[in-house]
Length: 190
Image (cartoon, rainbow, N blue to C red):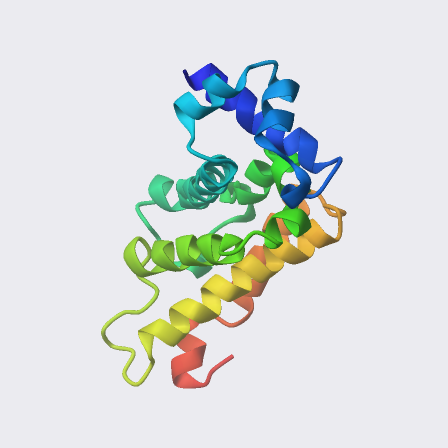
């Protein structure tokens, strides 16, 4: 069952390199995966269910990669990370077949929001971005700032065809995070 689903997902991704998502049919997917329609419908009701599962899997994997340094260091603050601990860019490269199709997936309603919500929820629930002594700072706005910023860096890298290495990207992310530590937003120090 897992192998079948994996092959169907792979088939859809491969086909998206050749034609748009809207042009791809269930028949195209099953023929490319060397299955029949009955096999497809045993796992999915329609093509959109398959694509939703791909997107959910990738968003979940991205967050798991993002969590690695935090879990390893008992959920330290963002500005305490070392570039060598950041593996999110390695994860993206390992799943480049999906991420290289980002522009094609953007045409699917709700695609971008799944990733943004995943990152936002990670910051809201897993990372203590805001501590109680930071009076006057809106936690939702601060979380949005980091979520949009991190996703923006990732999207810029994808849209530039992964021009820089994952190591370079990790170093740059650390420099950006550490340029204005969280406390400077409150105290005005930089």
